[in-house]
Image 1 (cartoon, helix red, strand yellow):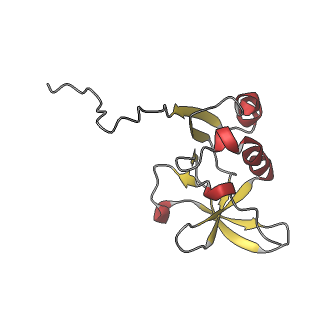
Image 2: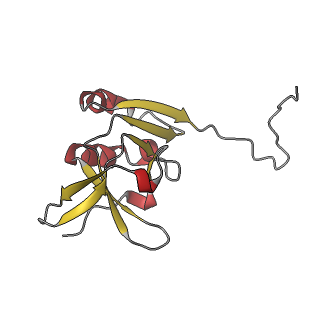
Image 3: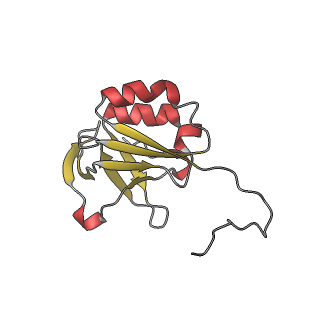
Length: 134
């Protein structure tokens, strides 16, 4: 049985911890296969693909299952993420509206959540943020 990989290359990343320091756990897949999985306390979802805007139902299904698979975009290798230690999820999105009704269930799972809204920037190539020098 194939592991349900994240949609459209949507990467669930591990926030603030180097991979070598990542807590690990054993995970049993639905087909009975035992695999090792990262078990981060903070999950960043996602900076590459807007999971809250486009894949909120997929995310909830994976949170309910307690794990997800992540395909490395360069090597194609699957790695697994367990949500057993998850205490916070950081959502990067331009549109949190599809995820908003699900936040209560996410909180009831013991996961706090933070939202980082990514606004659309002007398409003007000469646009610069106005940062004053002090």
